[in-house]
Length: 234
Image 1 (cartoon, rainbow, N blue to C red):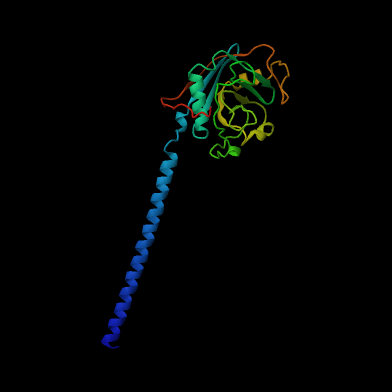
Image 2: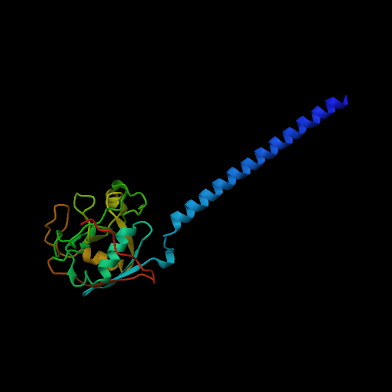
């Protein structure tokens, strides 16, 4: 083997080594870039998330029945939760009556005039899948609290309902109503109220209790977290 041939072979081998090194460095750089991009995405997407142990908890006192505790889900329905906290802690719900009961379905409240037509003077965007808000995956089941609304997806404001009954009786609500929390204590009270005699005035079932059921107060413990005012539409 001539010296010239050995030299050429050496040069070719060195070129291959350099190419492999470049490919390795490039591959590592791509992997690092992807890892950094994922870390940034994960950090940004979780920046405003609330730890489960710090979820706000609402206490609702109902005259003659007792106290109901409801955990709220700010990660799934952030603006809806902020709206509820703002209304509750301002005393908006204090002294209001339950406007609708329907055994095996729900109890409804949050209207200042005691009907199912009142509101707080504004509305908020509906945070549910069929309104383009896919973050909210809460399923409607017994004890879940959700926003009441008209046929307009963005018409909810202050009225809400607490579900009773089976999942099969409530599943048609999934993706169409902004669920935002669940009863963690006192569900038996909700069930009891859902069965009180009513005027059967609602075409969708149930009606206003014949004897007023009064919500004396609703307050929310935010666990030290400062929730800003809700974004309102009108």
